[in-house]
Amino acid sequence: MSLLLDAIIEQRRQDAIEYADFLARLLEHAEKIGKGESEAGVTYPDWASTSARRALVDFAWPHGIEIDIEYVHGVIQSAKEHGWAGNPMKERALARELRKVLPDGFDSRRMKELIDRLKEHGEYC
Image: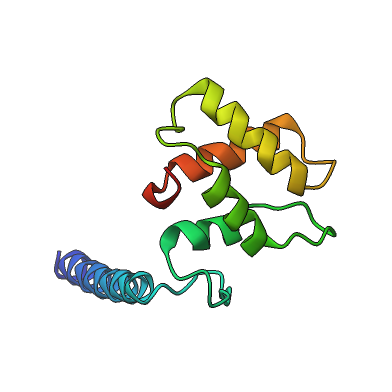
């Protein structure tokens, strides 16, 4: 019985250590978020100073194609109409403007993903 009790106590001690490690990692992650650092180690350009701009940088852009994301940000800011998010006509108008600066291979599914990503951030709405 004593061995069983020792095993239970040891298991509880391990759980406590694992929980403490979990809390430490949570705190570290929260500090990174507070500083605006990327979990993936991405170094953001100076213009990507907000979470919305960093989300635009983090978007899964096509590989092997150079895209000036800062320019895309500018197009979004100048082309979006007031109240565009949730308005199908205004969303299509923004998508038309984006298609002018994005590569030809940027299909409608990817455009919808980009528009949905933009709608998640107040800076773009």
